[in-house]
Length: 111
Length: 113
Image (cartoon, rainbow over all chains, first blue to last red):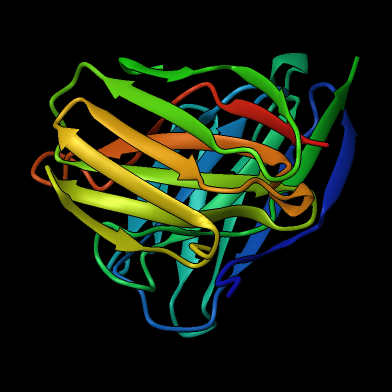
């Protein structure tokens, strides 16, 4: 089952613009995470937000979580070419220590 | 890649042959995972392990078996490979006592002809 659904599936923006990706999920969670995957590489953890948190920042990343709507968003500000990658949300909806991933958003930053 | 290696990195095999993929970690983490990644499906959990000789099934475990005889190694075996098992396979590790995040290996690209 695909717990996380991400929107949009693909996003193309100009360097310097902000990029926003959304993730929706179906059941209650303890935390939600965002990962980045560069082409041909493994996933890299970006940020974790717990169910009792509404917003979290890490550098140019801002994550929000709305548990009433079962949704999260990832905002990347002042995008750079190096941000070109696929971004995945993951939840612990199927139990502790087991992550369920969304299908991902492919982000392309154009110079 | 957080002390995780996968071998082989690429493999081409024929339908019906057995295949074993290896994941090795140097972090002494208790939990290890095998995922497959396919276009349109994201990452899906195949099997995971929560200790030596302790394993459990994930979402897409049919056709796969695993073994973990020591902390640092987690093996994924396709007893009789099928074309539907052509995919990119990722190993991940997690230490829940310190973090809820997973650390991923570089992946193995498997093609079954």
